[in-house]
Length: 262
Ligand code: PEP
Ligand code: MN
Image (tube, rainbow, N blue to C red):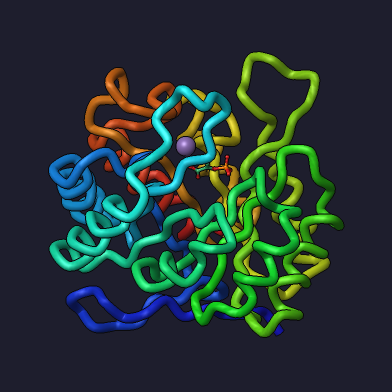
């Protein structure tokens, strides 16, 4: 039996949103929550285009300590406000065990990032949250290790886990990571959990994202998460892989055509 995860019903239609076994859920938004106006603009645009959920990091795992680290609690407040304005449920990353409770108060879905896939204390703490967890695959982890990390969360009491493929490190340099689309059917064979694909981090280049979204849906993804920013050149993080809202609109149409065909 495939697991179906219920995302709290906050959108205006009042209909609950499910991830797994019921169509493809589209999640979009900037890499980081930068400020209220930008978040609201993206929220409105992606909602109008057909997105089901909004993303945006308040706690950012940046390679350099000198890069923008995220707004923290203020970012969570912004997400809550935009969720109220748009009706879109939100997913945001939790990086630290001590913040799981705080982030659970604001986010509909908790995200555990690639860099924390084997942070076992964080996994156990997320297992004690009542929020569903999006567990990203580590950039150097096998599918088996990823599934064992999901077990950590479930074993701690939270069965609501969504597995997110976001690219792995390979010899390739023309893409930021190599999006492993084979992970989608492998996860579907090895596990009952829903599978999400994040092609933005998977390839690192906005122009490649639409093809990979089409591929992910054709491969059987239950959800797709993409980064969208109104002004990618000025984004505080991950601009090069962020779609403009108009590009996202076109992508939603293409995604719909593929979803209807599979
Ligand atoms: C993100 O979704 O913004 C992110 C940091 O992703 P990952 O953990 O996959 O790098
Ligand atoms: Mn990002």
